[in-house]
Each structure stands twice: as structure tokens, then as C-alpha cells.
Image (cartoon, rainbow, N blue to C red):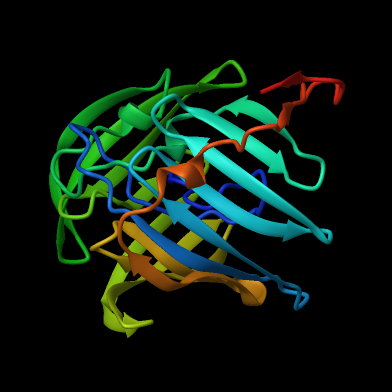
Amino acid sequence: MLEKIKCLIPVLVTGLCFAVATHAGTPSPVTEYSADIYQKMPQGTEVTGRVYVGKSGMRTDMDRDGEKVIQLIDTQNKISRILYPAQRSYMEFPSGPAMQTTSDQGGEVNPCKMLPGAQCRKLGEEKMNGRPTVKWEISFSQQGKQIKGTQWIDQERGMVVRQEMPNGQRSELKLLGTEELSGRKVEKWEVDMYQGGNRQRSFRWYDPALNLVVREVMPGGYVREMRNIQVGSQDPALFQVPPGFKKVDPRHGGDGQSR
């Protein structure tokens, strides 16, 4: 089982996924903003685009293989749409809770809120790297087997700061301090993953005001980040399918229904 994160840059189009702490409870108001997105692969390939986050949805504009592609996520109705402006067509998919944009910071977080079918039992409160956490036992079924893991959730941020699995896999987050990134005050976190005696180390820069990770640096030179973040109201039209676009069935790639 992997730590659940929210993807504010849709993976269907871009492969970019920026982590957000997942929280239980009543959602807080969405912070509307837009930002440039950047990804650098280990082989040196660079991908850029722009993301927009509004009250009712998200939008990502990208160039893929020389073609402009847009992804719209309707967070209220949990629908994701992939638009191809050159063909004036789009496909539609259901989107799960990991693509919602609202969340609470801190507080009591039940990890089962984002793990359908799992069972969670609170074990108590502990300090992890000097930070107060809530310790949970999580039981879930995988390939017909019942597996139990343990998570420690940071009480202030709602992040899973430690996770242990029965196969020896372990991950841990440690706050290194605060920095300024693109004019914004962010927290730098170290991420360690251990499996089979191997350690993988990466870093995340978390923006508390936006409640999401705005930069990640991973092994092999893999980098993904948000730049030029501009907080403010977004035009609702950005999150709508333009008139005249044809809906295409993604299962067959055949004719769809015109709007």
C-alpha cells in the first residue's frame, strides 16, 4: 500500500502528480490559483504546461507529442475530461477522491477516508522526529490476503510521516526547515523509503498556504515543480468544455455525441 496523495496535475495527460496532504472532516474552502508546471526526466527531457485551480474544478494545458491537450476535472461531480482542441473532441472518465481540491489542514485524520475497503484502528499518539503524530493500524485485502500496516499521521499537516509494512517496506518524512521558493514560504521535507535493505531519498517542498507540494526532487535527477504561482479567482469558463466539441467513447475511439 502506498501513501495516498492528491494529484493537482492530472496524470492522464502529464504524468505529473503533486502531493497534497489528504484529510478527513469537513472540507475547507478551495484556494484558487494558476501556475506553470515543469517536469524534468532523468534523461533530460523537459515537459512544461500550466495548471488552473478553481472553486469547482481543475484544468491543465499541455503539449503532448506536438499536440495541445487539455484536461478538465469537475471536482464536484468527480468527472475528468481530456480535450483535443485540434480535433474538437473530448473523452470523459470518472475521477476518484484523489483528484478533489478541498481539504482540511491538520486535525484528526482517519486514513481510511481515502482507502476504500480498508479498516483503520487508532493506536494512540506519539512523537515522530519531534512532531506530534497519531498512530494508526490499517488492515486491507491485497490479492486475497489480509495485510496490516502502520501509519503515523502528522497532527498539524495531516501527512503520513511514517509508514511500515509487514514485508519490511518503510517510508519516513522529516521536516528539514523552511525556505523561500519562487517568492513563497515553503517547508522542505526529506523523504526516505527503505525496502530490502535499499534506501531511496527524495525531497519535497510543501506550501502550507496552498496545502500542496510544489516541488519534488527524486533519485536520478527527476524533478517536478510548480512555478509562477498566482493566487486569485479563476474564470469558471476555463473548466467547461467549449461549445461544438464532440464526445468520443474512450473504449472504442469511435464516434461520440456532439454537444
